[in-house]
Image (tube, one colour):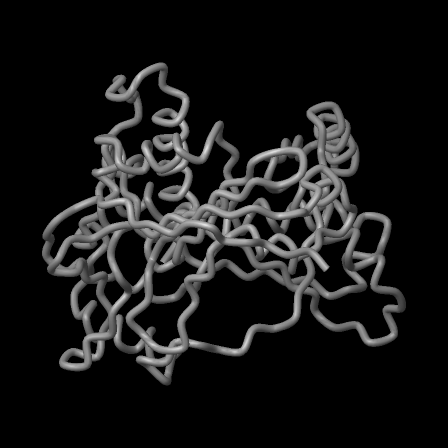
Length: 336
């Protein structure tokens, strides 16, 4: 059984004192997310976490806290100074073997990231772990989803990567400063709406833990060549007058929707098969350049369904493409 030995834990100070950061309704919907990032060395990681360009991501150093007086959640910064927990560890896990597996070993991957889950709030919103594995160095980043969505996450990762690969400390960073002000996505009566969202997703606050449905992780690789071939197939499957040219997202999502439906077997029970995706609301709610730098959550769920029989027929792919294309257009025009 794979194991990880932690040999040093420290805190990288980010800020000294800041006002609490209230969360928006978009933030209140989410739970933790665990990405991975690869960088040169453990000492360099700790050094870059404290670099000036990352000071602008100060909410990452706070704690997710339940405010009983208002029934809401906010990111609170400790009075003695906020910092990000930094863990150094070693493991006998073969990194190449782990990543090359057709089905990822979820339990082994979890050992490479710090565990910031808590049965009761307050809880850390971020921690980093550097693990020396067989065949490489892994940087595991645990980040609470109430803090950022994918757009904000990659803004942070690109800023951190630029700092980690800079030739010398203090080098200029081309990434723009992030915006964390939740007033950018604030609506009338939003505080009551936030409480309603919290009651729906986490009814037992300050105990945030909910049961998680079993799932498995598998990576499917699409090369540029395979993607172009897939799009040509899509064009050929549509009516000549439509000239439907799908986006990369629609092309892959439609292909997966149809493939999984057909692989599920008999259509005796012709029930709807749904596909759920996330829509970025920034273009609808914000103007340039704010929509490019807002780091908080600003996404909504979009759910689309077709009967299984509609997806299993020969022109099922064309139906999936048309349905998803229309759904994406409508979501972009009015995501809320």
